[in-house]
Image 1: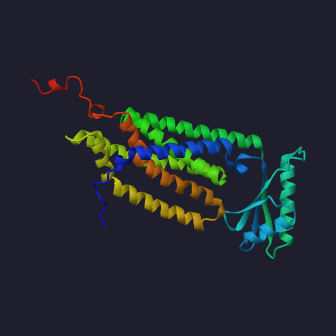
Image 2 (image 1 turned 180 degrees about the vertical axis):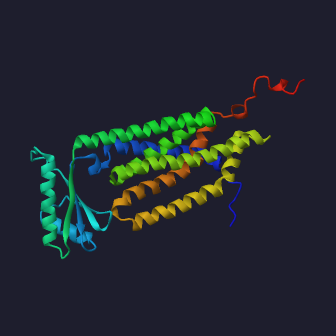
Image 3 (image 1 turned 90 degrees about the horizontal axis):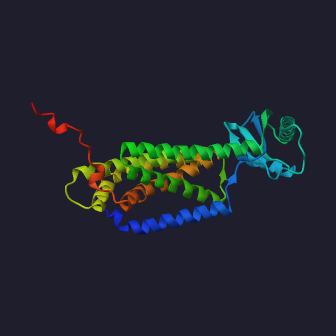
Length: 316
């Protein structure tokens, strides 16, 4: 089936702008009032890794832990269907002198408890203590990494295309990241290192889409003799529409496969990327393109500069 080639994307750009601004404001408010539900990677707690001789049934492990006073424990698959990771929050009422020793003791206790209630042989693979200070450093470094990435992207697109395009790209990327984080905050989805990696992947995916659209817009501004900036942007978006849909659809197929088949350890990663792909596809069309129109991009902005003395090159 052939896709329509005359969709007036920019005809609803004001409505799209209102929707984007509303979503960003709601996301910022959610982050301010609800914050994010940080996982053990960003908070303090104990991580116990266990190996089983047979396939692990997570519901049975959760039931055993709950019945023995570990109601707050989180159990996830780790590596294979015979390995699990038990995450335990720190008891703030107990003063700990040696966190490593405490983590080892907790690991041995959990291993013995689960071994007693299982027909499989349970092996303690390791136990680690993650301090709140380490979690804070990870959060700070992760946030700094995203800011540095946005800054480098802005410089690259300003050099590769034009400054107005770089502003549009960075606004679109910030839009995608803020809304994705807002959704995580509103629905209380755990934010861990896997999710942070997904946020960086979202930046890369959205940037790729934005660059494809920007390149076609620049080409049409230079090639088309007639038409307003809005008409040329519309033409560019229609020309890249099939590529955008096919890329997004195939990417979502893979991500939904990871979501339903990959296990609990990859769910946050997959959810973040699914949200990011949907929002990123939308922002490539309605945010990045909209920004350059609001900044009054013209043909003169995108003309190839003439080298000094080029008109004399052909003279004897």
